[in-house]
Amino acid sequence: MTHAAPMVEIWRGEFLESAHAGHAVVCDASGDIVEAWGDADATVLPRSSAKMIQALPLITSGAADRARLTSEHLALACASHNGAAIHTDRVADWLETLALDDDALRCGPQMPDNRAAREGLIRGAESPCQIHNNCSGKHTGFLTLAKHLGAGPEYIEPDHPVQTAALDAFETVTDETSPGFGIDGCSAPNFACTLRGMARAMAQFAAAPQDSPEARLHEAMRLHPDLVAGEGRACTELMRAMDGKVAIKTGAEAFFTAILPDRKLGIALKITDGSTRASECAIAAILVKLGVLEPDHPATRKRMNAPILNRRKVQTGWIRPAAALA
Image 1 (cartoon, rainbow, N blue to C red):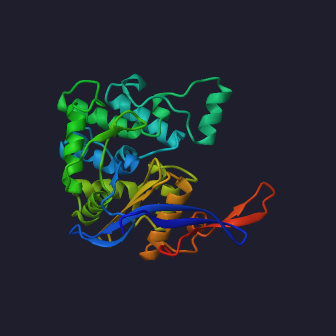
Image 2: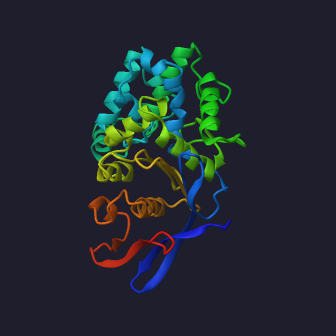
Image 3: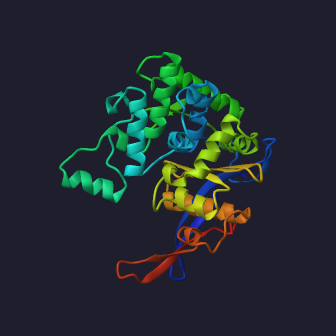
């Protein structure tokens, strides 16, 4: 099958009202495909699902150890966070250890998704800063690497040593030559690969030995799911539901990756229409199918086989995985 596969269905009463199609791949430690839906060789931009790969040079270069980064720092380097105080306070402190401030970031300001943080800015008639950007942890990691390399401040430029190191790491773990890149929402290059390549990369993370750079990153994510995303978010809630045994990461335009260390498996998923509701349902369904996520856990039921309510809280339908994922 080379076309997108049906993955998620929206039912209203007895009627199939909408459907979402996509591609997904599960790879093992050798890089072989265990299971696939749609086109495994589709070229994709993994967006923020690739943040753990972008963070690899932070460790392999020696920058993380030189800066005495903790697992919390590493989790933030992989995060798409809500901009809550637990995120922004840590990023601000990290910048201070580098003798830098918000102006050094190149991710741009973003109104925080966290309600308390957002309402606090509104009440104070304040504008958001760059530390509120969901990618500020990744960018502070980039700055840490840039300082370690003695490189210039424009670390988001594609030919900057930080980004050439990120590309080298990306091509190494995907085992592919990237055909190019797009500029992400945070202004950094986002390198393209096949979906199979991304699943292969996640499997390499999953099979990496203890204390390896890959293991340190996925362990940090599993230890600190609250820092990787935030309260109410799929990444945080589903990692908690799996008792920290699996690391998962969302990306814009309905991308998801998962790292399963106990099974030495990696997953990459892309919903073609960019729907987040569909990608969350699909990744939950695949994790349930693999036996690592309980189907009846509240975090699972919130996204898979979840009731759809109208404004009077009357159930009008369901969001369900399609037959291929059920």
